[in-house]
Length: 397
Image 1: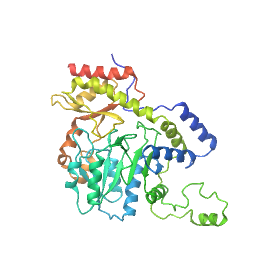
Image 2: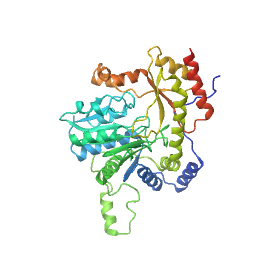
Image 3: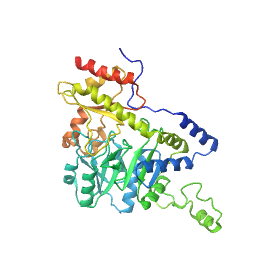
Image 4: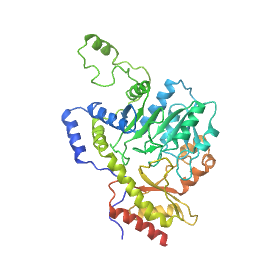
C-alpha cells in the first residue's frame, strides 16, 4: 500500500488562536514592530531563561547579527577565527565569512552529531575568538565541556539553537549558556512563523546592539515607532534630533507583527508540541530498533533532553546504500533530507580546498550515510505506522 499524500519532514498548523491573533493584527493596521512582537520576544526569552530577545526575519539573520555584535563589542579583527562544527547548516559558515572572519571546522560526535568537545582545543589558535555551538536536530551540544574550554581560552560562545527549543542540558536551557543564542522560526521548525528567527542574550549592551543592527544600525534612542510617544518636550526634541541617526553599519532584518502573531499562538502550545515530538520519537525508536544492525538510531546524550525537530538516522551497514533507501522512501511519499552536509558543499570546497571533507571523517561518514525523516506533532498514528511498514518492506529485500 502506498499512502496518497506526502509525509513531509515538517508541518505547521495555523490554529484558531493564531487566526484570532492575525485578525487582531489586521484590525490594528500595524505591521511594524509592536505589541505582538514584544510579547513574542518576552515569551520566547522566558522559555529559554534569557533576559532579552530580538525578533528578526530568520535564524540566519540572528546568527549574522550575533557575530557582528560580538565582533564590534570585543573589537575582533578581520581574519579572526570562529570554531564551528563540520556538520551543520551552511548558514553557520556563511555568517562568519560575511563578517570578514574565518570559520574553523571541528569534527562532530559520531553518535550525537554535535560538536565534539574532545577535538575543539586542537583547532584553537591565537586568532580564535569564539565557538559556535550548534544544537542539531533538537539535541543540545555538550555545553558543560564547551563552556569549560571557552573559559580556559577566554572565548565567546554563540549558540546556534535554530533546530532546538525547550530542551535542557544538565538542567539549564539551550540558549542560556552563551553570550548570544540564535533560534529559527522558519517553516518546519519547532515554532513556525513562515519566516523568522530570534537572537537572545542576557547582556543588555549586546541586546541593544542586536536590535540596532537589525534596524539598519539605527541609534538605539529610536528602534520602535512608539519610542517618540512622549509628553516630555525635551525628550521628544532629543529623539527627533537623533531618530534618523545610524551609528553603525546595519541590516534590514526586521520581521512583522503577522509573523509574531503566528509565533505567539504557538508559544502557548509549545510544551504540547515538544511532548508529542518526543512521543513520536519514542515510537520510532521502539519500532525501528529491530533494524539496528542496519541503522544507527538517534541517541540522547547523558544530561540532555531532546526535542526532536526531526528524526535523524545513519545507515551503518555497508551493504545498504543510503541513497537507495531514501529513494525508496521518497517513492513511497516519505520525505527525507540529508543530515546537513557542510564540508562537502561545492562552495566550501572551492573556498577551502577539495580535500576539506577528508579532514573530518565523522562528518564525511554522516554526509554519505545520514538522513532524517519527520517527527512533527501533527503526524498521525496511521502515518507513523506507514513509515515503519515501509522500512520493513525495504529491509525485507
